[in-house]
Image (cartoon, rainbow, N blue to C red; front, side, top):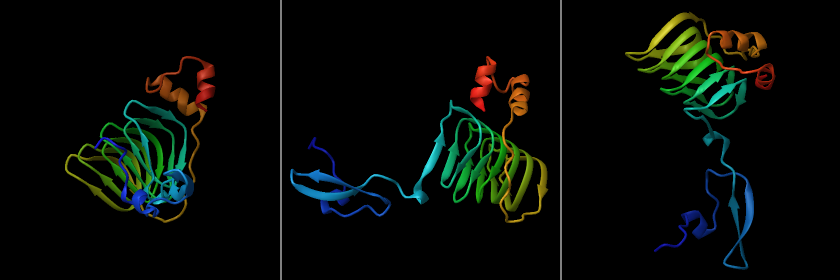
Length: 181
C-alpha cells in the first residue's frame, strides 16, 4: 500500500517510448534491467520561472516557456517560444512557432505567430501566418516571411546600460555589468 510505485515499463522491463539513453541498474538483487534517464528532445521544455530574470542570448532545439523576464535574443530551431501571461522579453525571437500571452518588445521571426488575449508585441513581426485574439495587441510593422536563418544581434553593454537608465534592469556595479555579458 505504501510501497514504491512502479510504472508499467519497470514491471515489464521494457523501455519507455519517450526516453532515449540507456542506463543499467540492479533490481531485486541480481536481476539487471535497462532504464533510461534522458528525455527525448521532442518532449524537452525549458522554463524560465515567474520571478527569474535572464540577461543574454538563448539557443536551444526544444520548446521554451517564459514566465519571467528575458533581455536578449532567443533562437529555437525545432520547437516553440511561449511567452506566458507574466512573461516579458526584450530582444529578437526566432523559432518555427511563437505564442505570445505576455509582453514582447523586439522582433519576432517565425512561420506562425499567435498573440493571445493578454499578449502584446511591440516591434517587428516577420511570419507566414499571424493570429491575434480579441484583447491581443500588436504595435509595429509586419514584414514578408522569407524562410531563412536570421542572424541574431548580440546583447551589448550599450543595450544593458540603456535598460539600466530606463530602470528596466538594475545593475549595482561595473563588475555586475561584466558578469551580465
